[in-house]
Image 1 (cartoon, helix red, strand yellow):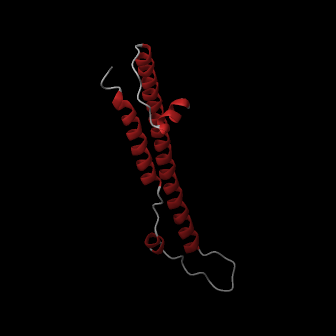
Image 2: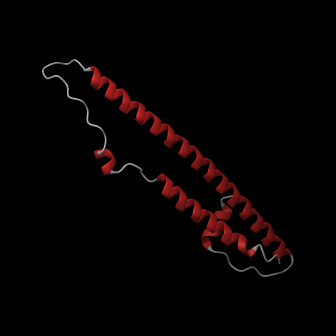
Amino acid sequence: MDPGSGWLGVLALLITTVGTVVGTWLGRTRTDRPEVAELPAAPQQPTGTWTVSPEMYAWFQDQMSQMHSRLGVLEDAEARERARGDRLERLLGLALAHIERQDQRMTAAGMPLVPMDPELTAARGST
């Protein structure tokens, strides 16, 4: 029996756990109440008219450009995390396939297998 094969299941669980923790940390909201309070106030508008002042127009354009750049950063981070998740899933699948091959070799050699954690058994069935 290959001594390293027993650790592959532990490695698969560790990779999944670390990926979940990192994804949760990166996915949390980054705007809090003090940041919202720090936003610049809109300039005063003339009363009794529907005309938008040039200051208000410039302020609005500035706010929209900041929001657009922030959305771009968030979309890039989401794409990176999605790619990282895909790689983790592929590596987990490879590790589980390796474990399955080792199990088959040991069974063919007549060695009894230790029952596996139900969560790992379910993951093996989904690959």
